[in-house]
Amino acid sequence: MKIQKKQSIKKLNFNLIKFSGTILFVCLLLTQVNVYSQIKEGEKTCVECHKNTVKKDILHGPTATDCTVCHVPNGEKHPLENVTGFKYLEEGANLCYSCHEEAQAEFKKRYIHKPVKKGKCAECHDVHSSNNKNFVLQQSPALCFTCHEDFEKAEETSISVHKPSFDGKSCMICHTPHASSQKRLLVENSKQLCLNCHNKTIKENDRKIANIGKQLDESSHIHKALKKRCTSCHNAHFSKKNKQLLKETYPLGNYAKGLEDNYTLCFNCHDTDLLNLKNTTTATEFRDGDRNLHFLHLNKDKGRTCINCHDVHSSNNTKLIAKTRKFGRWNMPLKFIENENGGTCTGCHKALTYKRDE
Image (cartoon, rainbow, N blue to C red; front, side, top):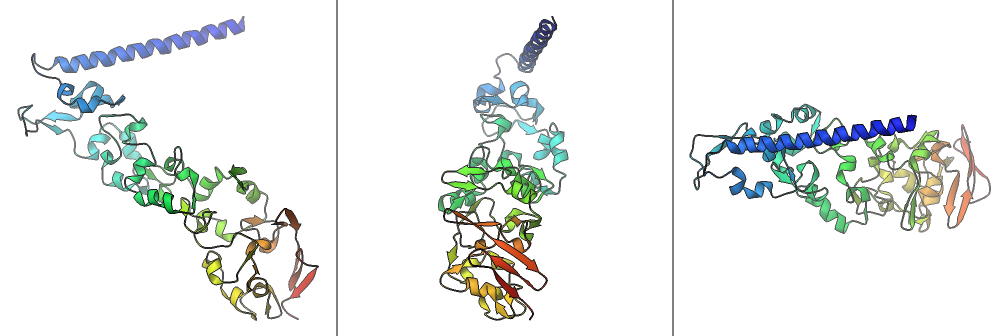
């Protein structure tokens, strides 16, 4: 009995919605008839001459009902060739704001998209009719590329491309088109924005991208570069350097020649002396006396890269020492025990201890 009652209520609600929609449609038709009934007998309606304004699928409300919401007579006879018989009710974006008050309130945020700031709504929106949602001239990213053409070119020339920047909703996944309280018109905090997607393992062709969100949550030590934003190391759109969207050079395998040019990403923050000085007491804490153990591991033709020992995002060990390291098909276990004067490491070799001070 209760089920039948619920079904009856649902049916009644649906019929009410359907009836309301019919009434609204009739009202719009009556409004349109009203507008055109003001035209004197024998005179043409607006759309008879301005057919292009209504040729697309979705009509802007004033276009569908009353052109004089935006256009008002200026006293000149109309229509006459090369004579403008109407003027805008308001100039520029103020005309749009006369209806879209909520949008004007949004534009008080700290960061405003340049076309919005200049009051040029029509650079992105068709004011009369459109085939696209929100009356945009084109769907993104094509619309965005009309100004940001360097991004379109980069898609063709880059080594790696961030797919959300160019597929589907593309730019709108990360950016708001009008105004934001975040830099770069981001929809929210940069780091959290990345973790909205990178909170799961992502499989892409022959690649598998780790669940970074989970790794950060489960780690006690976070790479300082990652504490505020991912874009300290990664380019959010594309990279011309390597396949991992990195801003600078960084070797992706277990071995690389020990040259500064191979590690420009790391040396944006870290001192190059840890690579170049054979002996030091200041450039690194990873030393046995003054013998630089970073130099020992890295500075050779077949140098061991950073990822042989360190997790680049986070770890439960100090110095971001990894728990295991991928070496071909083998997950090699690493064991690092730190003490006040150095530490002991086991992994690639038997247990070896270093002491900074004898």
